[in-house]
Length: 312
Image (cartoon, rainbow, N blue to C red; front, side, top):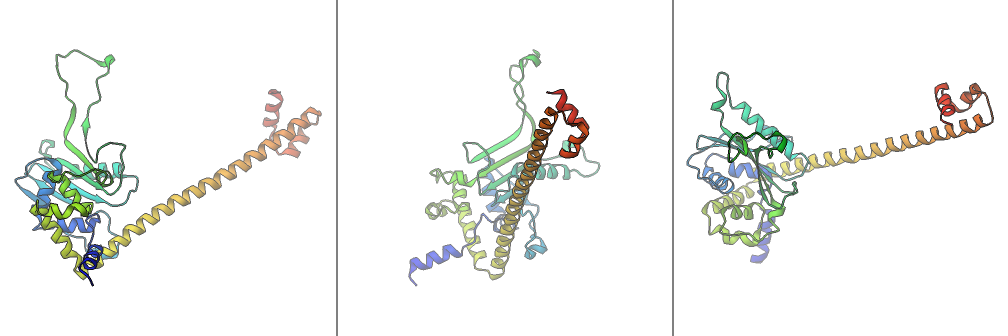
């Protein structure tokens, strides 16, 4: 086998960071804090002095292919909780899904007796292998903002500039990889360096590995996982679970469409039959046929016959 063929085979066998299991194994494991720190600094554009991974464990039932969310959660600088999740398939619910996780993390952090002021800011980061929002940016940030003050509700309180943010405690990030792949990456930009690795932009990865030691470590970690038979077994099971979940969703959509069409046809047939009954009733009324006889022939009610007479 030639060197080129070996490289192609290695590329084919390499696990994908876009699969949530691999993403969690690389960034959510104790001992890999420096890689997660570098990635989060790039996304959030902050300096992280301290980082603690809060959920490093992989669920014990991972091999049954039924496990749900595999997120990475960390506390940074003892002031923020960061939840980062990789989503490979679009299930048309990432807005609601992310909101639910974010608010649950925020509420769960307060134990009995603690005050709201002790709650830490929660940031949800969603890396998506699909486009979701109608926005001209691959990285979108959402916060709880006020709407513009309407003229009829304006009161001159003397504020030269109004508050724009209702709460600093929640923040959502959406990174859409297909959008990123459409641009020429800036290989000096740390976030775009990481996204080249995650999105498997192979033509730029080799150069980036020499620019960022943490990305080089992450790439090496993926390669190591890829050669481990047990890890590959779990990886394949996870891929199967994701495919099965998508097939179930698509089957449900197809069944819903088929059921809707069937109901529509049934309703249409019933409507057509009703219109035919009314047409016959009108002809019989014009011939001065008794109402009782018309009811027997058409199946219409006396009230429906009276309505036809009144609207003539």
